Image (cartoon, rainbow, N blue to C red; front, side, top):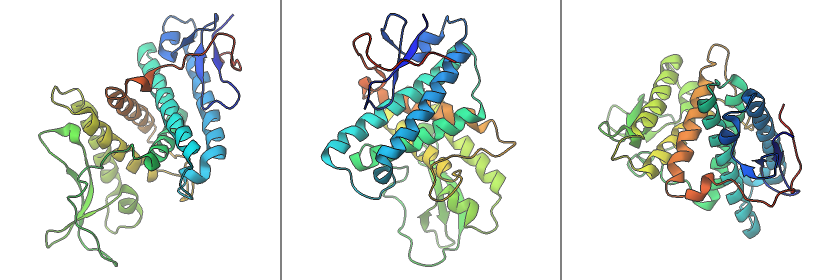
Length: 289
């Protein structure tokens, strides 16, 4: 017998179980397995399937078309927790087995991150974005100035940063990567993308600092990752992510950033990474590969 994926009817997401039916995380399962690559690939495919189901079930709420009902709020909480756990399990499994994130994993994990963030938004579980409350409110019309990535605190890189427009008169307006890439003139797009990558890596590197605040780390990463992913959708009404040819390494960055964010939030939400405990024998089995 082989380990399998278990998912009850109506259950959001899935979890792995051993051949004996005991719930187990993907990393614990993959380490020591003769074919960890098959387990990891199966996990990714099942996560993709879970996203398709979630889109059909919660699409109008995740898209902002309406506010969730009372029962839906609980479902959204479960959705984000399951997706966060599955993304983290995938990243840790790659790290422990020496496997490398491929483009497809960046696309699927990226979409899962968008789902998680959109699920947390109406539940007020996102926390403040970097520089929240410190920027000027833009007026209607074209704003003249220079786009720049601005750190919250250069001495504490784990606090992150965000794009802003700095005007010649010293005002600072909020800016997004998508606006910088597609709505601004005179932008060096490759340099801007590289700055954004470096900002993500800076937060991840700083997350291990002794004085790092896990909530600030999570908020910083969530904002930078959300800003990146929104600028890399394949259409304005889509949550499908694109990774252009020649930028395949961005997949690993997306997977790692998602995992570090979840790990930071798990420090004050310890049940976030807990594999759901279910009696043996329940669930629909999907064997690896």
